[in-house]
Image 1 (cartoon, rainbow, N blue to C red):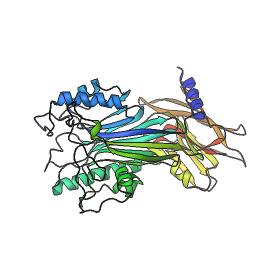
Image 2: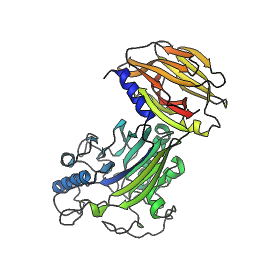
Image 3: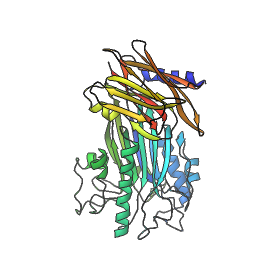
Image 4: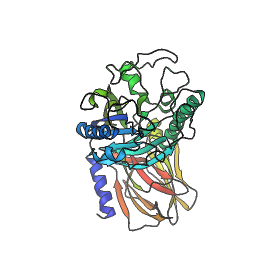
Length: 438
């Protein structure tokens, strides 16, 4: 399919996009270490057990599954699962992180990030490149979800507690930079407990505006106090009142309302044929419902994936008016920068300082309605080479040099272009569109 036609079809789908829906998500430590390193106190053969896990993944058709310790039995797991989107393994012990995702939703921007701090004091946490993964998942047109999978440092020594707290802080800081303005889901084997005084599972709530689903739905919104005692969990657990280290945190965005509706310890759904457990971790399974905001809408993007993430969505949601007063483009051979001034006077700028700046001041009642973006390759990486914007009055503003790989992006009926998201550096790598009602 020609790039221009593909761009047009993507935008046509936005106008008739699904505006609400449901999905579920699960985290499961699959106990995939070689038996010589860790038998996990699980009856039976690990190859057989892993095959059973994969078969149940397919049977239950869970929307998003994060797994940890997916090491030396990875091929067996995938051979028995039929999810359409799955991450490639990073290797068995000691080469891989053991983190993988199986999903009904496609994604972009997949990354594996190693922990900055680890400890071998109680557990061999530095034996493999443990850490977390990041992906930008498309749940529906206009709804992207930043999904994080983590496996934090184990153990309770002072060194392990310090490393684990640093692990959680590292993910929190990454969210601040790379998930600004986006809906976020963090789930995995956190090895943290609210009752353990030196652990910090509350950091995502404090620093990233997220909710812990267990705290929200099983504990009435009140986490156990550090140092307190909670009911111990059996495996499989017969109650959700007890705390395990496998956790899930989430938040919506100014464009997406996201709510957890059901929390389960799902061990009873993942058993061997004879009723024994398949893994030493009780899986966590959560149902979600979502809906799109009617004032701000997130549209398609075009370009590459390099550069630093930016997103105007939080600023637009906080502003008393999301109307653009001026649009400025900088460019020469490519688009170096894009800048808008809102009717409130707030300036939102992205990109570098190269090229020549040109500005279009919108008249009263005039709005930005469409853009033609063209991309090309610089240093073998896609960037935005040209941009032409058209207003409701038919006036245009252009920067850069056009290529043959272009897309026309138009605001849906009743909306106008209000801001942008994407990737930038000294130039614009990717440009996406945020719309507001007119």
